[in-house]
Amino acid sequence: MATLALAQDNAFAQPLESQLRSCVLAMWIGDEAGFATEVRDSLYWTSLLRYVGCTGHAHEVAAMFGDEISLRSRTLIQDAADLDEVISDAIAFATAGQGPREREHTIELITTHGLEWSVHNSQSGCEVGDMLLERLDFGPLVREALRFTFERWNGNGFPTHARGEDIPIAMRVVHLSHDMEAIARHASPSDALDAARTRRGRTYDPEIADLFLTHGGAWLDRLDEVEPWDTVLDLEPEPRRVLTGDALDDALTVAADFIDLKSPYMAGHSRRCALLVHDASLHLGLPADEVDTVRRAALVHDFGITAVPNSIWDRPSSLTRAERDRVERHTVITEQMLRRSPALATLNPVAAAHHEKPDGTGYHKGLPRGRIDERACVLAAADVYVALTSDRADRPAHPPVTAAALIRRSADDGGLDRHAVEAVLTAAGHASVRRDPADRPGGLTRREIQVLRLAARGLTTSEIAAQLYISAKTADVHIQHIYSKIGVSTRAAAALWAMQNGLVS
View: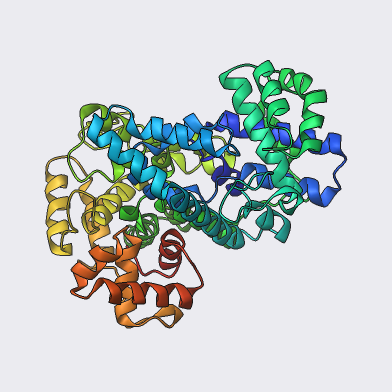
């Protein structure tokens, strides 16, 4: 099921098994509480999709703290309702390894702007998440609950400082179940019970905390005896939707946008790859079902990049060998995630092999020519072409003609398949695949589209102004007009809107 595949991709926020275990625990709490079917169903999806908007602020988190994946893993057992603890942990993480002067500057930055930063990023995550959930056709209970992802019982959460029963019951359960599973796994079940007792009435709904204090020990023991993936599938609410055809394509496109929001340099990457491989596959004369497979594989081929920190993806300089090793793991993670679902596992020979090379020097299996799926060769060529014609942290986009020459040279050297390269270049037409700025969705002006594209890439207002030779004040006015026209309030949501409307590549 495509939605569960999206839900599982939270390696940078929680390990997959932890995400599934916490969902099981949440459902046991809901059953013990005697929730009505509608509330129980919303609890299931709320638990699985709690972090669906987190790629929307991964860039901003990494810009302040560096490795956002390590930061998130360290905050799993944090008492998010204790602001002193949150600030102390943030300072400790951000200043690790810094000298005295740099440390002093970082502490001042966090203490001065930390609250504003937290409000903005939690709002960004919620806004992006809701936009994705709307496209997945989730009902109002799930969408409403996920708007309170970062709120807490005592009102010390973000972005609105909602408190108590103003937070939907499904999210109140998820706040506790996710924390308890993490604490039990990182420390012990007794530590989880102690945390529930200490945080009762502050971080967690006291009634939910009391349920856990009564039954939590047995539940945590029981968790170790079940297979989380199978149990979560068994708990899925009825009627169970099976996505096929256009519905599956729509869900995988949501997944593609979720992936590409990870970095402003990746905005629209998976969509562009899907369009190119579709046309290239038709040019090669592949059967219709294989054309569908390669296009769908292109939409999710980079699932694994969400497990690699933005401190690597957004680095404006060369990577170390260790960092390159982390990058190369993303195809392994893509393969692991897709194979969990029998329907999506059929995409793996293409999606997980898009960095294999005919000369055998690719990754992660080092397959030689003849053992690489022809469709994976097409995706590999499209992936390289799209990357070359897009801005990256360490270089500007290459002109299409230059990109064509570079991938033909790679085919000569054995790095790409020649037939696949020529098919992709034919599909690309040796011209930019950007939409004509005259096609203006949302009523945006040509200048506003220029500003939106730069904002989607993560440029600040001052940087946008410098690039467009306008004042910072004028750039800010454009941004506010854009937000008003398209109905968003954060950069990440604007970037997602631009991706959905084909304005970034």
